[in-house]
Length: 304
Image (cartoon, rainbow, N blue to C red):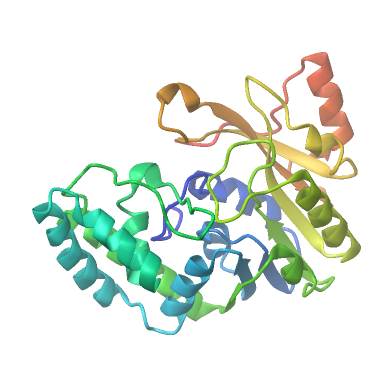
């Protein structure tokens, strides 16, 4: 079973971790680097000896540094969520907005965890001023004891992973992170998916995707990019333009994203790399497959 982080967000790679890990098991590197760590689920499951985990969302970095520095412990989380959950239940859900206002004013990591686990559809969305603005999930008894115990154990598991490795967490722009990488690093990039609606701390553009490609290629480091290839509606053409000189391996995945069931569809997930991954082919070969209407999956379905 994969290690599941306590912070939730849409697009989390929990069900893809096994696949990603299998593709890098023969890759040699000295340090694992993530310019877009998000919840950190991939790095925490890979469990490298040394890692640089970065993100533009300051709340994520503050949370994981809190675990690293023992400011956030499983014991503290258990008590906090038990107490705050009782207030939420007593208020019929309105207390959620009190916590949200408090978080936007103070930036407490425990409040961030509370919101992450009680907001609508596990979304992580901020307004232009940086304020968390996701509504409540409408379940007043959100923090029943079973869920509190589950989250507590997740915090404990992540704490143990961090203790076993040399993890550095930094709040910074991806360009700053890429300026720090060495040729001996393995850079795993999971930016907001270009061409698809995303809920993230920052937006993502074609210009930024080009900068990511240029800087990561010029570093001579080994890189792996998580992105999407296509769904039943369209194809990610950036794979064949910006990342045209790469290898690609694909797998079908289902994202539970969106308020309506009709918006939740399967996607051909892709790993793009400058090394030949398991079952990978050149991107130009994949382009030909799509144009010919051939099967675009290089690996089997992800287990549900």
